[in-house]
Image (cartoon, each protein chain N blue to C red):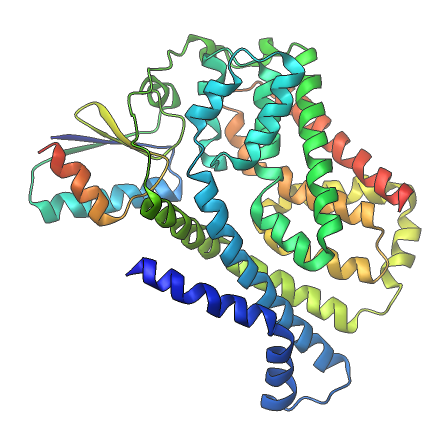
Length: 79
Length: 335
């Protein structure tokens, strides 16, 4: 699984990154993480609200930091 | 669990809000045994009473606004602004700026998204001015410390400034001062189709908003109320009036200038301004100061430098500051 966090380094982007790492660990799946802070790249995903979460090149969440449980549900869909 | 908590908490909060004066009385005079008269008692009573009423209303209103915002999104706002002519677009963008979820860290992606779908620069600026300037925290604090009339005056002046400034920027045709890469950027199709949230999820949005906003602003609010209480208790009446008289006509632009770097503590500026008015600062000057603190954000301007060339940023600040100064003079003159 390929997980990408889109964001310019605001506190919410860091929070999203942190809990995504935690959830992936708890679900015990292998994932490759990357971060994208280049605005023109972020725009190419059609995202207007950061932070955003991209799994396997598909935007699954924008503009907020979800609860751990919600994030678990989202990520589980892509396992 | 959270749902029950909200149902239980809401009446408790409302109860405390109604009896805030009695609670402050009991705390200050009975529990801490301060004398009924005197500067120190006054200061402490003012601090406790203001803190209670401001925080309670913040909790309730931020929660409700969080729920209202769950009905809006930048994507929907962009769609409804597409193809709107200049003035209508400016008015709609300003109104939508109030209710659309917005954080200054998202200013660039939002700007790119708007420009890409052909929304004129002036309309985009109306949104970018109104979104931070007219926000629920500022409105609640104004309502609590100045009363509803001033809160309404603030909202209407803020809307006029964002509509007119955006309209002027649109008329000036400044597209040439947008960074070149912006127009070469391909803005992708919005892939994410979020399901319409149900009632329970909307409540969750409200709670998240409360958590996020309160955890960010509470130190500034308390500090602001504390300084305000000190001014209220210890600064002599008419002290500020004589100071303002000495600075003369340029006190309005001066207060706007002082307000620009104070962005991060905007929630704290309002109680201080309210106490200063008590000591003789004219309302228009205080209004201009608060608008400058709340509406002109230095970190946002630094961010915007990535998409705007310097002349456009300067024009933007210039027009916005001029608008705020005019509002300041206007209310000094008519009140």
